[in-house]
Amino acid sequence: MTFMKTLLDIYRAARLAHVPEQEIERHILAGRLPLNKGKIALADLIKLYPELEHSRSYMVEVVTQIKEDAVGKARRRKAEPADVDTLRQELRALRREAEYYQMRAEGYRKLLKELEPKLVEIQRTSEHKPRFEALIRWLAQKAKELA
Image (cartoon, rainbow, N blue to C red; front, side, top):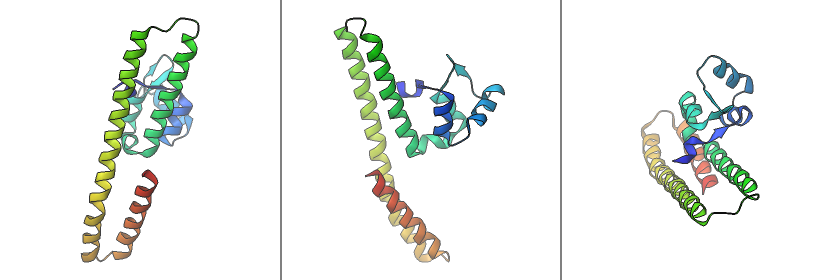
């Protein structure tokens, strides 16, 4: 998918990874995080911070980056007439990306729905009932936020 080719500046990469910009810069200097046109590929950032792929901020950041890329392309195109075939191709690609994210979101909703009863069952036999109760409440709150 094209979203994995998304390029981020150091500030945005640090914000997405929830780390200081200096940490991203250290990874770049150490060669653990390659630069592409002075920016960081989202795929490379996820390799370094695999937890990003499952975070809500990851999805929000990717959507924000896609929007900004689209605005940038639109600004560059103002000087040249739009090619209908190119616009159709881009529209198809954006639809595929939207479908992909919708499927991922639906998968996460299904996972949350299946996980809660399993946690309740484990809670019944656990000696850590308050912890499980807190976890179940937290999970329900997060599911509500995602709905």
